[in-house]
Length: 455
Figure 1 (cartoon, rainbow, N blue to C red):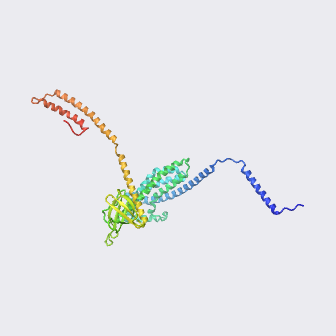
Figure 2 (cartoon, helix red, strand yellow):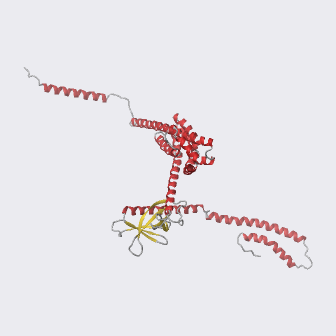
Figure 3 (tube, rainbow, N blue to C red):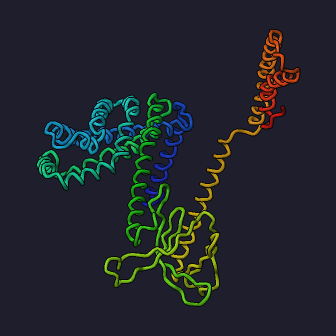
């Protein structure tokens, strides 16, 4: 009689059979015929779907933000521009100086909003970009508008009351006019980001791709103009601040093309002696200003500085001097055409920053001078053309002078044939007159070549 099979062995065998069945089913499924899918098709399709999702999300954000933007522009035009025009609270020139082209911008953006809501991004911006000159005019006038508005609010009581009443309306949501005026500048920067996202997520085969690409370049120019104007205004404020710090009006810092770089206290090392003196230095794009503090006992200028010297950076060279500060701080040497300057600081990072700033300012100034020199050379007429014109001019003048000489000789011959000298006149006088009549022809011939005349 056969012995019974243990239960553990039966369970193990059943598991093995189950695993073998699953493996067999998997191998059959893997080798079963299926439609052929080229390599990379799924990845390309997924990429296009990802682009489409990003494009839809960007378009939705663009439309929503454009609706809010147009609503705020409507507040300015309706409750300020139109009512101030009807009431006559401000003169027309002052009103136009404050609000500039905001009304035209509002009309243009209302048209753009209609295209964006229809999903026609390319067509909308293609029609919007030719009107960017309204934004350019508004950008260039923005700083002037802020100044004029501040002056009018100080001296015009009716304008202050009107502004306060309008801003108290529920439509403004506690926004002030000063908060609404910079909106076109901010919106251009937003357009720049939105258009770049739309272009990156649009297929080159899409008809809107070229329209969006052109819109990106057009809007980027206006955005760059906004940044340049902001930097220029900030630089102007810095120049004014430093000018007010200096006592007197001998040193004029407000010059066209001059840019503020940095300022700070440095110690000057005299050529003789060991005592260093702290001085205040202002670095600009073309000059280095050295100043000292006024006496604190001065009644009016106790908090100001006295300008001592102005060093031009045009012919300046900068060198680092090592071994004199024992690894604490640093020393730099400035060599000018008529002076030498040693500057020291106990702060290593500060003196390194000064060295980099000086080298950068001098390098830019020399590059600018080199470019201007090359431009002047390009604007000069070429020497060959000049010599050719000088040679061709005498040739033409000689031809005309010969014709005039021949005509004059014919005239003199006719006159001499009809002329009878008086009785007291000799033949020598006749010859003199003939020679005098020949002088213009010789003068015309030789005046083109030299300034001397041979009679």
